[in-house]
Image 1 (cartoon, rainbow, N blue to C red):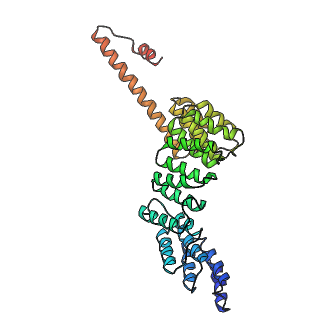
Image 2 (cartoon, rainbow, N blue to C red):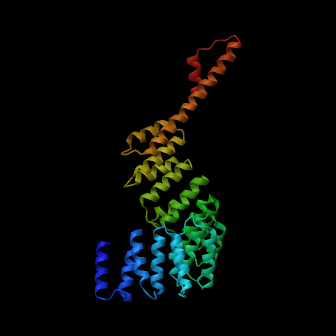
Image 3 (cartoon, one colour):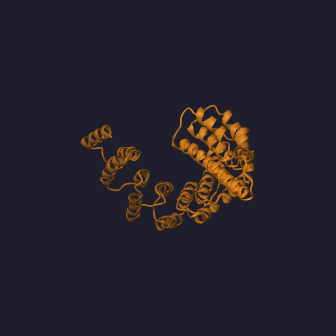
Amino acid sequence: MDQLKQIHLQTIVRGVSLDPLVSSKIIAFCCRGDQGGVDYARQVFDGIPEPKVFLWNMMIKGYSCTSSTGYAVAMYVEMLRRNVKPDNYTFPFLLKGFTRSVGLGIGKGIHCHVCKFGFGFGSNAAVDTSLIRMYSLRGNVDDARRVFDASSKSDAIAWNIMIAGYNRSKLFDESRKLFQEMEKRRVVPTSVTLVSMLSACSKLKDGDGCKRVHGYVKDGRVASNLVLHNALIDAYAACGEMNAALAVFEKMKTRDVISWTAVLSGFLNAGKLDIAREFFNQMPDRDLVSWTAMIDGYDRSHLLWKEIYSTLEMLTEVLRVSGYTPQTNETFLDIVE
């Protein structure tokens, strides 16, 4: 930024600071950075008598990228007040900054403007995708789905956002149905699609769904990566398919602590504490999650032993009342077997 400010000073000295090309370059550069860069861009912007829509878009984008959604919306309102019409870049930049904390009323108001200026009803894929994302983040999956159904749905981006939105709202069966529709329409999924679907399959305990998703990786239709492999292990483990989870783990060229912890947790959930401990001992690195999983596994095992001892004491008392005193060690071995 310091070098940019020096360059900007030179343009002022030479009298070319208001040249549209110069000001555009400075504002565009500043809006890629942090909040300080956007603040400086605003100073430059405010010195331009009649900024074109491109500059308004850059400022809106800058505020959105620095989570200053309120300033982005205010910029858009001021843009309209000065009779500058939005173009097909304005709304994606504006909606990019919308999070769950932004009021739904504001989002719906922007949606009305999208339709008013002719960018709604499937006429612009980028705008549709931004609206789907905005509604999904707010948990309004019905509104998101209405926009999705009216969109072109020509690539995986809108599908990914909609599936992720269903997952976020814990509507995992809807995620599965949408993925099946995606397959019927022959839309090629991405690794993002598959990771979202594996998350849904793990919640639904859908082992067949895991294998279906895994098929995309096995036959090379979707390139594998560490995140996808970890998701496969986690989903198989959640479905109790530890042989499949272990097969994925053993074929991985690169593993991280998440890979190891997914296998570890799978064996713990299956009640195989000894195997889980072996994996835990082999882990190159351990984090809080892996330690917690191992401790919880021992805790669950401890509860099981307490239950056994409680049952043994109850049986002993019943037999004592009946006049028979058993050999406790032998009885305990019978119970364990």
